[in-house]
Length: 151
Image (cartoon, rainbow, N blue to C red):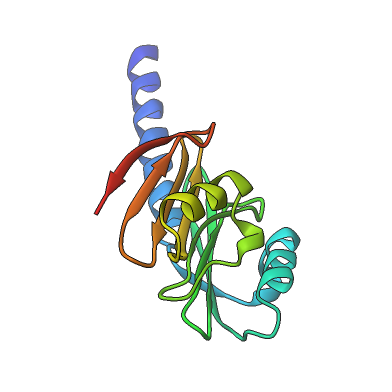
C-alpha cells in the first residue's frame, strides 16, 4: 500500500511540475517596460545608443533562464541575458558601434576585409560570430582565432 501511495504522489508531483513549467514557459516574448530591464542592460543602451529611441522591450522567460530583447527605432536589435549582459547585436545594415567590438575582431576585419562594417555580433561560451556588411559571416573561437567563414 505504501508503494502505491508513493507512486501516486510521485505521479501527481510530476504532472504538477510539468504544468507549472509549461505555464511559466508561456511567458515568451512578453512585452515589458524599459525600466524593467536589468540596470546593466539599461546602462549599455544608454552608453552605446544614446539618442536612439527604444521601440520596444520583451522578456523571454524559460524554466532555466531569462533573456531580454531591446528593439531600437533604427531597427537595431540587442539581446541580453538575465544579468543584463549583451549576447547578440543585430544592427541591420548599420555598423555595430566599434567600441562594443573586441579589438582583436576589429583588427582582423580591418586587415582582411577593409571597408566592411560589422553589422551583427554574437558572443557565447564557444566564441564570437560576426556578420559583415558584405554578407560574410565569420566565426571565431574564444581566443579570437578564425574557425569558419560562411557566405
